[in-house]
Length: 274
Image 1 (cartoon, one colour):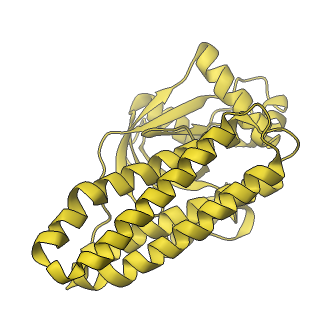
Image 2 (cartoon, rainbow, N blue to C red):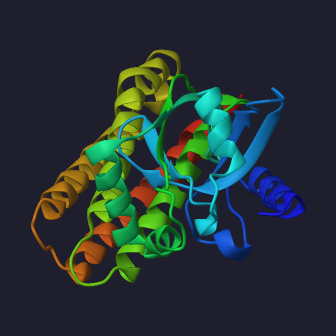
């Protein structure tokens, strides 16, 4: 991509918590900052990515099928410690170039989800590198605690929006990457709620006793969301759950979760920021 185009995307991404227009609109995008292999200078590049569960995401050094690997790939081979921005979190990660069967399985997954990857591979004789970015640190967004909670919630809202679109746009059969996208969302939500149940809520129970009814409601809503997540996982385990059935389940989760997030922000954000 031209440098001025990349900079426009970077500026828009940072100004809008990861949302951009143009060719990346409605897609999965991150900002990858690498250290120059020759210069040592820092370079930031917008890239599409694939969720991979756990603490890593996948990027592919396609360069739109160009005959040579992109500069950012050469940089991370020389200096694997990189910085990733996802719109909510900015964190350090280790870049690992995948090889053999693992590389081939993930690339096939990507091409099934978006045939554009296969088209890029067909345009060049080089094998498109597949790179895992594994987080090595992290934490809540900077700023006031209530604003940080809202930012995390907005990231879940965004992920739900992406998953709903991906399910609605999917063809017959449930692709492997879409399963992983859904399961990664489930994992993230459960981790977030476990942190709240084990830390945030007990803190407020001790310090703001009058909040007890609201906290009881929030805990009950966590149990409801967990039940919906378990039902979604069971559906994803089926060989072919059907797009309509899966979309209905995701919509049901979305409705419940959005109401929960709205109520939690109403109750906790003023206290956290105060």
